[in-house]
Image (tube, rainbow, N blue to C red):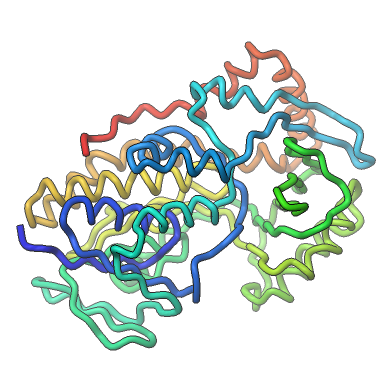
Length: 395
C-alpha cells in the first residue's frame, strides 16, 4: 500500500490520537487546527474504559498519572455551604480496577501531541474553507495556506465540525440540543479550596462546582438548563459572561465569588450541551471522528475516551483495508458505531444529574448521592456507567 496522505481537521484529542496510530501504520497525516497553539487547561474530564486502554497502548498512562488528579470526595452543599450529601471518590477507581483518572482535557491533549513528537505535520492557526472530492482524492482549500491535495480527509474537529458542514452540507444538521448549557474556566488564588474534592451546589436547573488544581489554581464548572435559544452574539465572551451572571448571580453558596473571578480568567469555555447523531459517519473520501461524528455530550464525561477509541479503530481499519477507504470506513462504522450509539442513549439524560430541573428531581438526586456513601451502593450505581463492553482490535 502506498503512503496515504490524510488531512485531519482538529488537533484536540481525536485528531492527534488518529495521527499517532496512522503513523504506526505507515500513513502520512497532516493536522490542521484553527487555534493558534495547542489548547491548554480546559474542563476536568473523567478518563476510563476503552480510552484508557488506548492510552495504555500508546504508553501514555505514566504521563497521565503525573498530570491527573485523584478526587477523594464528591460533595454536594446547600446555599450556605453545608454538606448535603457526599460519597467517596475512590469508588470510581474501585469500579474500574484502578484504571481511572481525572484530568484537565488540555493536559490529555498535550500528552497525546507529545507522543507524536513532531513526526506529523501540524498546522496551527488555520482552518478549512472548502473540500473538493473528485473521487480520486480531495483538494482542501484553507483560510490561509495554499490549497493541497490529500487522499482522505478526517473531521476530528468537534461538535461544530467544519468538515461535517463542508462534506455533508444540509445533512450535517445533526445536532440535538439537550436543553442545557455549560461553562468552565480556571482562576488563581481562589480562597476556598478543598484539596481532592469536587464540591458542587445546585438549585433547580443550575449547577456550580469547583475543584482545586495544582499551583494554587481552581477550576469551575457551571451548568444550567435553558429551553430558549442563546442570545445573538453568544459566541462573544462578553455575552457569555452576561448570560452566566444573569443565571447564577445571587443564587447562593459561592456563586457570586465565582462569577467575580470569571472576568480575569484567561480562557472561558462556553457551549450548549448537545449530541451529534448521523446515519453515516463517512461520505466519499471524508470521514468523521470523535465529537464530530457522534458527540455523546460534554456532561457524559466520555467524549475524550470515545474519541481515542474511535481513532484507534479507524486507523486499524484503514491499515487492514490496504487502500480501500470505502471498505475501511464501512468496517469502522460497523465495529464502533453500535457501541457509541448505546453510549449516546445512556448519556442523553445525564445532564439531569448535574442540574435537575425541579425540586423533586433535585431531592431524588441528593438522596441517591447520600446513599452512595455506602460502598456497595456506590459500586452498584457506578458500575454500569464505567464499564465498557467493547473489545479493541489488535494493533
